[in-house]
Length: 295
Image (cartoon, rainbow, N blue to C red):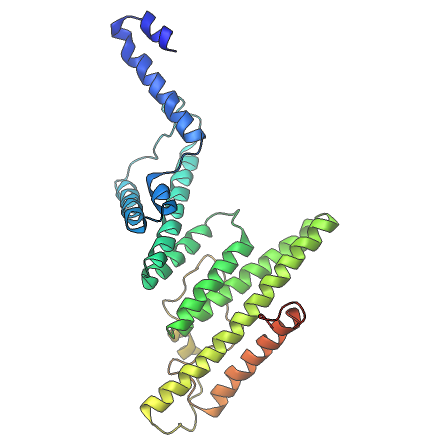
């Protein structure tokens, strides 16, 4: 390549050098060199990584808001990708940025921001028809634990409901897929484990709700009202604004925690029995022989 450059006139050197830089750039991309943000993450330089990632997030919003066409990743072959594919590439990169920000905020102990970026990542991943449903459900289940830990029970309930819906979709697709017997057994075992984990989380969710209900009752030092049954309209209003994943058609199938927590024996009993049922079903999957901690 150098001999070719030396043999051309000075006037034609610039486009040749530009072509050389272009091919060097392709080599850089194709060898999957880490970005500056990724390198900072690997080096555990979390604050520096946050700066790069936040800058990337800002650039995405500025570009999208400018009303321009999609960027052209290959200037020498502009027709190689359609506009739709170019936007998809950029949107996927932005989703990865949000994912990394969720991780780095967590490492910086910014739990609220980490949870919000995790939620944003999960929502955007639903736009990808090839999303791994089991991984998505597991991440959503883990997000529910954060909401339960801060007594945000409608949000936690919504996340667990969404995870259960995704696992049901995955189970249905595997049943219809006709995979080879060995592979099917392996994937069914994986799915059974995740379902057991989900049931354990549902049980923990209801136990945490009961614990908070008792604490709030003791704090207020008030008498238990005769009845605080919640109607469907009130439950719907309680969950307003928590439809994180509107791409999914979700209808709650399990008891929801009242907005003022359990204030009567009947309300507490409903939560207790549902939590107990979930834990009993999870325990069947985790026998004490081999799963001591989980059991």
